[in-house]
Image 1 (cartoon, one colour):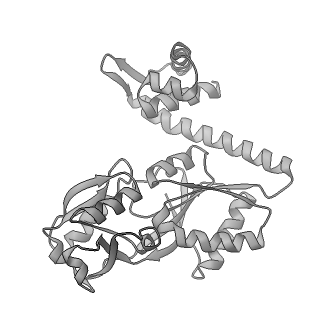
Image 2: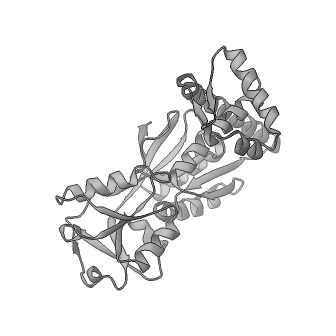
Length: 303
């Protein structure tokens, strides 16, 4: 079973389109089809259903996709470790993060790490949680800082709580509720809410629903967005509201205001995610920096 066949299968499974997968892999579509056929032959199982309506994973294919991603991640990790040893240094930390919630903790930790472990090279990758967790599992990142409102999380990852933040209401500066110092949550029953799309942050809308349920209503989602900048624009220009971790104060600056809610929702956790068993020196240095900058320590969990 060749690694290129696994990569081909994973790409087709993610795109559910042979043409798009071939373009992403930069190979001809007939060659891609041969990869899938040879893989299915070696496994003696059909991984994909192909028909005129498109491509779909079989039940076997869904199971094999998880295992294939894990294999590719392990291979990538092995290559990274070899390169680290060959370079004779502490290596590179490829870090994904969700910009709003993670920015403050990330800035403090990197400042400490660059003082104590200057040989570590850091590559920062900003994205939404669904994308970076998938990339982490695939071996593209070494660690991810992401908020807790985005379950379900992929198997094969460890996580530890780094910090927690207050949850605030964000809205346009001219919104009627902006005149309040504190906004009663129950008064937002008829408000238009802005939410991240499920494809970007699948747990965000569920989290909004849980917060609003405590005040006896279900929020009316007027618009869905796919990026933090879009969320800022939506609440600044529409008569809409959203709830976000306090870290978004550093990200949203123009045309919006933040207000605490009454009653105050539970604090939002910020989590460090990495693949199970990864203990490279660069990641260890970053963990130590997070521990120093957040003195209560890292509270471990398991995905």
